[in-house]
Amino acid sequence: MLSSILLQLIVFFLPTQLGLHFWPDFSRAAGLRVDYLSPTLYLTDLLILLYLVSRVPSILSWLKRHLRPLVILVLFIGLNTVLSSSPHNTLFWWGRFLFYLVFFLSLRLQKITWSQIKNLLLLSTSLVICLEIFQLYHQSSLGGLPYWFGERAFTSSTSGLGRLFLFGLDLVRPQSTFSHPNSLAGYLLIIYYLFHLHRSPLWQRVAIFVGLLLTFSKGALLAFLLVVIFNLRPHLLLIIFTTLSLSQLFLPTLAHSPSFISDRLFFLNPLRKMILRRPLLGVGLGGFIPALAGLLPGSFLLPSKLQPVHNIFLLALSEIGLLGSLLLGWFAHFQLKLLSKPRFAGLLALITITGTFDHYWWTLPQNKLILLLASAILL
Image 1 (spheres, rainbow, N blue to C red):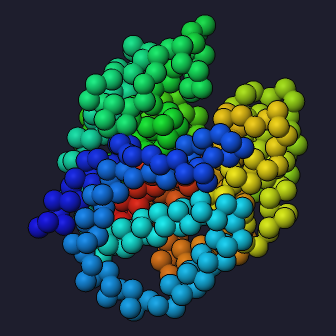
Image 2 (image 1 turned 180 degrees about the vertical axis):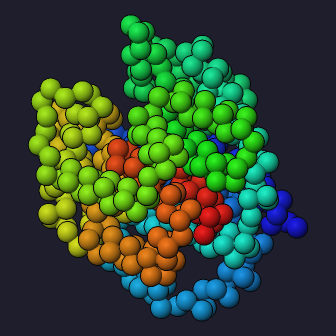
């Protein structure tokens, strides 16, 4: 009973980012505070912790039956942390990784169903979309209560925001309770996919699609078209976009390309150096930005440049190396047999397409949690 109530609370607060940020020395790169490096205690973390406490017996029973893969994982974590460009950062990131992994395990062991979560998921998503529409119309944050759920204060003149130039207008793209419109788009994309698969009422899918459309996220809308509208084979999409991702390592920097392309290509040169220097074990989970700060010229050490590369495959390759990537692939294929399940293969295709152009599935808690929840439902 208690675990069911906690699960409902987790689902409702899933799109929020209320948290307490800490700023130890290792949260800085080149002397600058970096949000991605700040250890943060979120409200959802506390709810998940309480939920896990209520599920301890079943979790311990499963862990006892699967000691071998756990030993392999712990050994790799130890090596990746000790040899990291920022060991303290890597230790924190692996701690969060294991925390989320145990959460996913507990969801699977409880065998949660769509009927258990759909109502509160629809309610929280509706509130997120309403806030998104307000922000787009007023070109500013709402403030007040939404601030406590993670809305960041901004106006139309705030710098560093995702912007859209449409019919001569310079618009701030809405981000609701998320840190960026693309992150919001990825979240809504997975929500739509779940409601689509379970043949939810048309009005619910239309409302979610409107929210997705208003993010103006090119990657998310491309994934929507290919997977949901055209219903292309997920395995084909996985091959195409994984190949496209890895081929970016060999792309030159294009001098006169649009900003959304040049900003992504900017990281390729330091990324190649990271991979060549530590091909097997990487620079450490969460270590991309500290390693990047050591490779950029002083004139480029700016907050706008100190961010992860916009590709989850290349980011993973740089942080956990070839060995970690192979271990991850081996576990996904042989232990979970993910690709043998058509509905989950579609989810992976969505992640692969959007992950070719952005990093939020690897770096941001809200996106990782909706991915874990969707995976638990579909597997």
